Image (tube, rainbow, N blue to C red; front, side, top):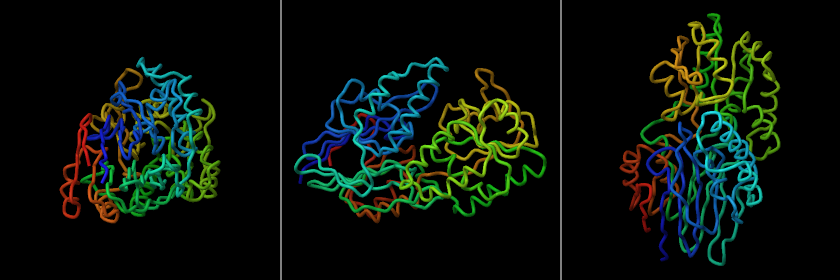
Amino acid sequence: MDEIRLRFLGGSDRVGSLALLTQMDGKNLLFDYGLTPSKPPEYPLPAPPVDLVFLSHAHLDHSGMIPALLSGLNQRLITTRLTWEISDILHKDTLKIARSDGYAIPYTLGDIHHVKHCLHPVKPNRRYHIGDDLEVKFHSSGHIPGSLMFELQGSRRFLFTGDINVIDTRLVRGCKPVECDVLCMEGTYAGREHQRRDELEKTFLDKIDEVVSRGGRVVLPAFAVARAQELLLILRNSGFNVWFDGMGKKVTQVYFRYPRCIRSVEQLKKAYEAVNIVHSDYGRKLALKGEVILTSSGMMDGGPVLHYMNKLKNDTKSAVLLTGYQVEDTNSRLLVEEGKLDFYGVIEPVHCEIDYFDFSAHAGHSQLIDFARKCKPEKVVLMHSDNRSILAEELRDFVDEVYTPMDGEEIIL
């Protein structure tokens, strides 16, 4: 049986900067090449030449360094066309933020444009041959629209999950297990469970109603990619006066062109049409007279959210409701831990209500265990997690070997 060699260049024992080198059946492959959007940004280890690059989805912790990786190369990038299009938006925004913050990013606008020429677009449930003895099959990962898992079929079956979600959300359907010999699985929520989605949505809408009823406004900082659209769908029939601002507007328009990647593009269009769209500074003044403001950025490190928070930071009737993971050293983490925000270099206390709702697009602990069990692997490699040991311990009840390699460490399977 041919061996599989793995070496993480980033993202092994933490969430961020994921990059995995894989040698299998004579091919050198790279899965994802991301960055951590902290201040300053953190990058993976340098990548050697490879035969193919696979990109699971557009989020920066998976895609953020793709332009630097492909700079000047005639290299094939295997991903969905939707993932490339959203990545292109995020890469350009990354350059913009870096220039604003004074941080160097190791690629240029020209490098971003070059990625399009490397793109080899694929679709879920299709196969792609890599030489005579190795092929890859693509499966939806259920994480965000356009996201993929990669199943390599050669002398052995190897599955790279990227980020996965196993439940149906309003935006996308959950992923299904894929039988394999070696499972390389994310563990973002190892040791943590999610509240039932229907209960979570009710609690979330009840909190908004509570704030609006006392005369306050609700600010919803949201990731422009997928989270903003999920919240649009949840808010659609709520009856609240909702204003939508930031990059999420542009991403939503992109999603409309890919109906096969969305659970119901018709529902998303109706949700988008049901809210007020902010187009200008005057629109932002009107939004502050509304009830709910859905805006980027989700980490609160820039974007319109800081404008709204600056206006409402001393309003004890109002609330900011966080709906996603707060990376260390980001503004949203500062808000959660210290009740303060950095307004472009000036740190000020925030006196409005602060609350958190876990609208995660990742599988929870027991869901990861169930997914792994149904994949029936002989070996599991855990990645993209700061709490792998608790997941590994439970997996060893039914898996022969579980690996938790560190960045730079090579393992042979």
